[in-house]
Image 1 (cartoon, protein in one colour):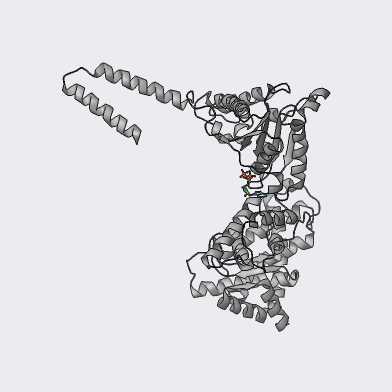
Image 2: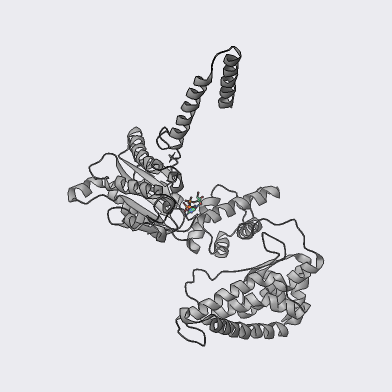
Length: 490
Ligand code: ATP
């Protein structure tokens, strides 16, 4: 705004001079030249305030504010003890730890861990994202790295602390393998500068600096970064297990009024695969549902709805036609009935309400914290995936495009069967299978399981129709209600 007014005033002044008969051409050259140089200098970052884009945080986060992640916390704390007891380290001649790399999927609490690390070591905390360093102009990234370290020292001195932690998120952007960016060498210069800065960190420096990097693509990092003396401690920050999820839910519901019926353990059980960020969002969504219903407290139903929303997106207003709804009811009924047959008590909820990309869905209780699957388990999953299409075919005589996602899931399970030597081909080198052979074995596995699925559903055709009708009327049916119904008709 001020800039526009100034530009307008300057233009007006020049026009006035011109009207008065002055020769303004040399002036125009001078002003234009000055403006050009100014832009270039700004773009090249030479007059940037050192560390622009850097967040200096004093938000107190402690390790107790981070749910789960017991191993990550322990490993990180071990690393940080180098900083906390730096005098002893010096006496023993141990070189200081310069960098810790946090590896893990998005939203698992890497930033929180870095903040807690700053608190634990009483260090100043500066956070920056790797993408901040990537510019079109050569030298800018390297200059920013230099100013970042300078700024860290300044902040620590100002806060009267003996150490500073620099947290670099999206480390793979700044520290990707050198030579992999063909457009220019800017990335490489930036990374080189980071290496130079880290190599210059010593135990005799005051304040001491520790760099904590975070990435979910460790394989993309330049090997030089992982060399001893740089990021020589790596800490995995994985998705939380059930206990971790419960702890995170407890942390994020501490400030929210919960009804008596709320069972956070149950929600933790249902949210396999959720990150900390997902769980935080879930508790927030549940509170919004409570607000919408003008309820003073959050009840279990709100939390359940929030699980669905975080998993599948907002409910859509678009309503399918009556025919489509019936098809979706049959399809989801097929999935649910088969799931309860091959794996009793596994259905958490069935719904034919459109959400995100799905017209309907069956939510299963996850096989919590299972790392290994037997052939039987994989085959059951394939049968459950195929049951929607088989049910449609059986009741309506045709299949629909709604099955594409299920087929994709089934195919990925077949791949796992093949890769783990559980097919009739036995243990094989998959790369030596040609397309025809791969198709043939995939087809055989799927055809056999489709047939088995059909036999199960044919036997329960009447039940399937009844379940689809209930779904058509009620739109959403809980797993418990489904089981109660199945028990009655059995
Ligand atoms: P990204 O890789 O996307 O930068 P991140 O791993 O750094 O993500 P954070 O920014 O630390 O994740 O987490 C995002 C939010 O998710 C936090 O502000 C917090 O609300 C919540 N959260 C994530 N993990 C946890 C956890 N273990 N305990 C409590 N809250 C968590």
